[in-house]
Length: 391
Image (tube, rainbow, N blue to C red; front, side, top):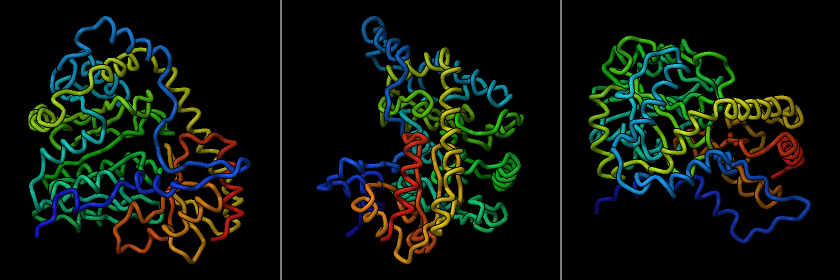
């Protein structure tokens, strides 16, 4: 009997890990520290919410179907913002709005691949990318990263076959936190272009990159949209997670194919979310800069405070954007330790095995720490609990 597409992949790590909390009560003096999920838990700024509320009451278009590739004003504003951010010249015709960045990836894969095709992705990977490739009947070809958590271009070249269709990267990276150097991204772009592949670059966390200026020059290339497919999310920058607004930037011809997928899945992106995203682009640049400063301060807190668990044998493998990626010192596998951390230390943290092929032993040694919702005090408390923990 054949297996359905959904049965071909695993349960979302977020869903699975939340099930570990069932029936567990946490002492008043040791409340749960949730470092499992990289999503803002606070609502958007008041001004943005007010703009959306006005639209609910006074903008009839907020309640109707809209263009498949998104509202024209949002596409134009995002094109201008991307152009400014990357020192490039992007047209609104190269922009599509999607129902979250996950849908941008899903639509991109649907526009590129058929059953049995291959997409090269670094491992550790973003689990929803792997899940969608599984569900699509596309083979995710794991590209191992080095000790610096960065993939190697020559190793990627060795994985290319006649069935290869794309290389998919995430920078700043989820789950490892590392920021991919501009020269590394250019090398992957050149590799993809020379082999007729797409380079899918998910930059969901670009607003929290520690570097000043454009993080790369790919969008400045004259024919960038023939190779590069740039993905973005409004969820992190404006706390619009529940409204599902993302984006894809690529050639009009590729967007024509992507639109077929979007039209059959959601018909159009969420109108209120798009109205909120537009208001954010027009009014929240200073606020987002402040949010970036806070995230960079938390990154510094991870780096500054890590010594207390380094003494116990923990290693910091990568750190940036919303994430720290670490190696634990214990003989037990990470998935077993993760459950003990819930009951014995009131910590919910995802094991590296959730981001790796099953046959890769590195996953059993690693954890992802998502610190977007943990301030300096919470990070200090996290490290004290980890330093005292013994499985």
